[in-house]
Amino acid sequence: MIKTVATVPYSDQKMGTAGLRRKSKVVIQQNYIENFMQSIFNVIGNLQGKTFVVGGDGRYYNDIAIQKIIKMSAANGVSRLIIGQNGFLSTPAGSNIILKNHADGGFILSASHNPGGPEGDFGIKYSNHTGGQIPSSISDDIYQQTLKISEYKICDCPDIDLSQIGHQEIYGMQIDIIDSVKDYVDMMQQIFDFSSIKQLFQKGFTMRFDAMNAVTGPYAVRIFEDILGAPKGSVVNFKPLPDFGGLHPDPNMVYAKELVNFMYSDNAADFGAANDGDGDRNMILGKNFFVTPSDSLAILTDNFNLIPAYQSGIYGVAKSAATSTSVERVAKAHNIGYYEVPTGWKYFVNLMDSNRITFCGEESFGTGSSHIREKDGIWAVLFWLNIIAKTGKSVSQITTEHWQKYGRSYYVRFDFEGIDTELADTLMLDLENKLPSLSGKEFYGYTISEAKPFIYIDPVDGSSTKNGLIIKFNDGSRIVYRLSGTGSSGATIRIYIERYSKTDINQEPLKMLTELFKIAMSISEIPERTGKHQADVVT
Ligand code: VG1
Ligand code: CO
Image (tube, rainbow, N blue to C red; front, side, top):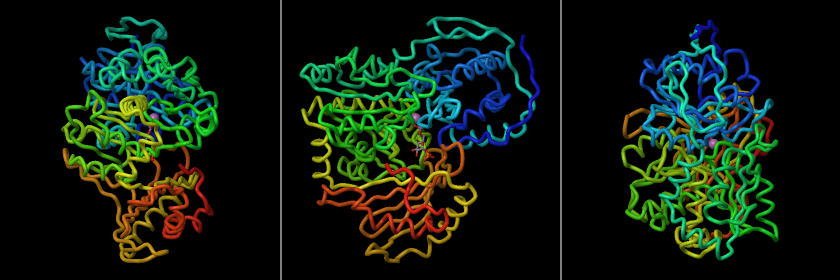
């Protein structure tokens, strides 16, 4: 009962920083998912003998999209699907399943940190055999396919029951429904010192983990409460809900308000953390204390030898260009490789595969290592717990001592949302054209040493990517401008601002960046062109 169905192309199926991400209302249109999936299958070509991993973060439409993917896989001749029970898999868990099973790729149904529900967003992240998301060259081919697709293949069969772990077969395609959590937990136990962390909790250490009603709840409950012995109730918002209970599952100071308020209250736990919709982002908090993701990457890297899996040494470390330079100083001190890549985890994959790096991170609350090919929220949380267990120090102590040793990068990201796409494109283009004239100019006592687009040449495959504009100042301060590639409507301009101080480490970041923010605004003409004098979101 394999049907070939005629269809007409959609013009908007271009993938962004991390897969395809659109409003749920757009995705539920007739044949939208079908067109996109068939385009991927067409680009892959022969699917005989191929295995794919499928799962999602449980958001609205996950259940419907997954059935479409199963039926289309069978109709297109895929040999085997490995599917998370009830259709659940976090992004890091999915990457692990791909690598562990030597699968040919996988599909994680998620719009990550974007809100879900009928009024929210839906998305699909497509990874290949590396366990990481496909490079732009392949997503460009898929986009070209979506523009000319005229038919797709699908099985005319009943929905598959995804509630029971086990094996089934439809039209010659093997389906294995697996425990969504188990393999991931096994992997974490191989990386970290679980017995030390367990002892920490036995001594009365307290934590709160906010799963934001998204996919990490079941992973976090199993790891932190069941295995490590954190008191019941340490994991909050642990039940994945199709609309995330109305939360915007982006773990930062703005959207994880509930956790932030708790950690800044008199009853704060010793340690606080949150993950995003699909479990690849993390926020780390101490009592009355917030660790910027850029600093977190630097601190984890500096402490690699406290973690069993990294004790024999690490290759090197990489960060996205927009991320602060904190980790660069750590890489120098340890004399390990150091790389700067465009925004998006896919740019780390070649560096990990070629043993150039072990750790990597982004300012957007993403940290990870070569244990998989995605950023990993729970991994970062366990890394911090492992450091705390080994050193007996608090989050604020660890971070402050880090600043005392290396100096501090004051760092804030400013997002200007809902800007007309054409206006944003023109603004960025005009800004880029202006850059050469800025060198040597002085603003508010800051002198520009260099101003240019960020261009990355991948050392492994030689591919080149332009992503964002960077202005550097004589004192090491930096302003980075980028357009977001994960939104589902309009444009978002991100401005990332950093200022380094070797000795003055106890100031308010926003205060330290006042002049640089003014410079960033005036050079880009954001106020004049967008009418916005302040950012919509500051993280
Ligand atoms: C954002 C972040 C980027 C991250 C990407 C995917 O992209 O800035 O660092 O890799 O989201 O994160 P952009 O293009 O909007 O700045 V997520 O948690 O999808 O998986
Ligand atoms: Co995510």
